[in-house]
Image 1: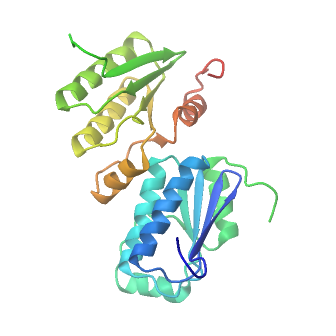
Image 2: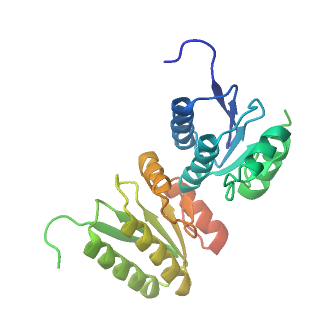
Length: 129
Length: 129
């Protein structure tokens, strides 16, 4: 449906889905990302979801709310979500603007996220990457 | 008491009760479902309850609250509850409307729910279905 470069990718590693956002997404692209990801949780029977936001240098309040929404929806579908890769500047802005990140589980990077999910879901994450 | 097709079924598999809701229930039907289910927990000495909501394409706030209530009541009667089969659209609406699902334990489908209950209750779930 999209022309041009892929805006995000969703890869599967065992029972974990690894979703990487490649560039800043506008609101409708974020909604498409959410729909794709929630759909994949069911199809791939995922127990855990990692959303990698390391490529984002801006995260606004809509994006924060969408990430929270994805985490809540994933939980209703039986999967735990971890957000990884918040840049220091992004973390600064999120905190300065007082955006609500209350229920988001975060980790430093993909490796820490996988370790966390392996612990809480009991899912095997397969051989080391 | 009801005429017409059954609105829900409650089956027993070992120490687990599997309750399937077949169609959208109105508020009084939901209360009947709750009463039947909590009664069955005692009669069947259930250690776990699975409520399958895959047939529902709408879950309103009363239904969400009733499911939470059932889970809390089941816990007081000594049984763990897992809700399975939330459709993506239903999960989306629940999250968008900000319904409180805090204490609900969820899983993708019946199989995942049984695996979870077997782990937390130690109940045997019998041969694979």
